[in-house]
Image 1 (tube, helix red, strand yellow):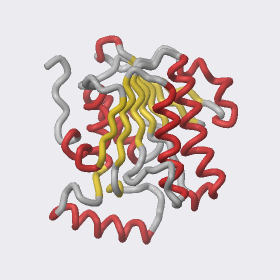
Image 2 (cartoon, one colour):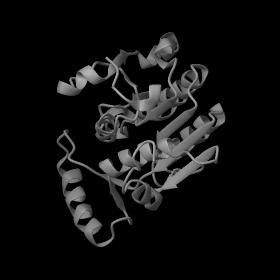
Image 3 (tube, helix red, strand yellow):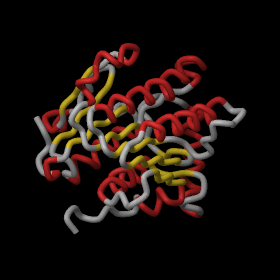
Image 4 (cartoon, helix red, strand yellow):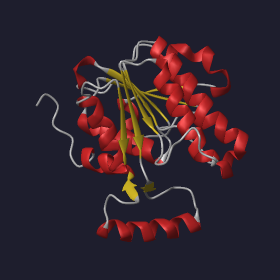
Length: 231
């Protein structure tokens, strides 16, 4: 079932099972920004009451080209897809964070997507000696090269969230950064809810630039409040 409202526009979300992806889905449904919201992932998600408001397309990312239909007919694509080196290994991290995302962007553009919104990372740089930042920089370049009418790249610093997975050291670090955020709210961290609001806001007010890169401070600013649709 499609979500009501949204002026007939359609969007898809990659990575809806992650912290930012879940926050983004809540924001999209709360704002009724799109008439149709499709989650594209490797498995169906249990969403409770929200399940009736979205469509879900299950794909095999290793054979993503066989799932081109899932990417057709969307005006906007949101990408929060990603893993970690610790979870997937170096090769797996590169495959998910770069290769899957780049191929999805190509399929989205071929399917008619006009605006692609990518969650990247602060410090992303294709020339970096650090694997994480290098891969993030590489995927930014690949997505930009696809040729969307609009491409927005968000580079958040450390994401503040209540992660479902149990990661004790990460939890301690986030508690510390959460305290720091009270004093320096835009310096080294950003709540996932703020990132989600910024992702929606940049689509509702895209501006004239073909490619826009939002660093952490700009994400905080844009994510403060999303103007009401139609205003």
